[in-house]
Structures are given as structure tokens and as C-alpha cells.
Image 1 (spheres, rainbow, N blue to C red):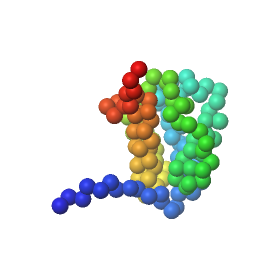
Image 2: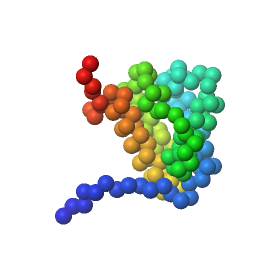
Image 3: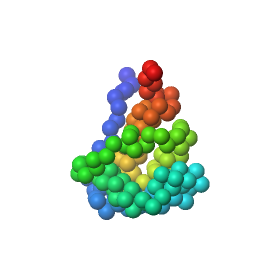
Image 4: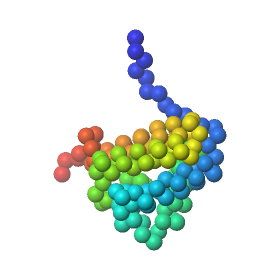
Length: 137
């Protein structure tokens, strides 16, 4: 019999605040240089990059370390950005590559797993992709 249970990737005990900050800063450094993602983010964050990085460190610290520092609403923050499946796929690929480059293998697996879940949730809520939530008008 095949085991069909979902495999949950648990937080790696060794993920520190320094690891979170290093991942966030490395990832967004790559985003800013990316020919597709750079303009999308720059359009939204021009002049506010430092505040965004601080917020993303809080977000990923809450995800990875359970700190509860992030108090935002990601679905609201991403509304009206005209995002599509290709943007999400590119974001995920770049995030996962960055995690592999700057984190331990367990840490990278954890971050990749959570990023996949977050992207899927955002896509559903924002009406992007095949699982998109389509409410009657």
C-alpha cells in the first residue's frame, strides 16, 4: 500500500534570526536584479525597500521560528498587482535557489516547503491559477 499522507517539513532547529535575515536579503537582492521580478517589485516598493526587507524578515521569522512578529495581511498587500502563474513560478524558483545557496539543506527544504504553501494560498486568494477562488459576482 502506498503512503499517501502529506509529508510536513518541520522547522529546522538550527534556523536562526541571522539565517532568516541572510535569506531575505539575499533573495530580494536577486529579485531586484531579475529581469522579470525586478520591475514588478520596484513598481510597488520604490523608495520603501528597507521597510519591506524589515517586514519580510519579520514574516519569515514568524514562519520559521514562530516569533509572531509579522502582523500583516499578505493577501491584501498583493491585491491589484496583476500577478500571474508565471510570476509566482519565477518567484518560487528564485526563492528556492536562494534558500539552497544560503541555508543548510534542512533549512532550505523547510523554506521551500513553506514558500510553496504560501504561494499556493496567495494564488487561490488572488484568483490566480487553476485552484483560484472564484466567487460569484
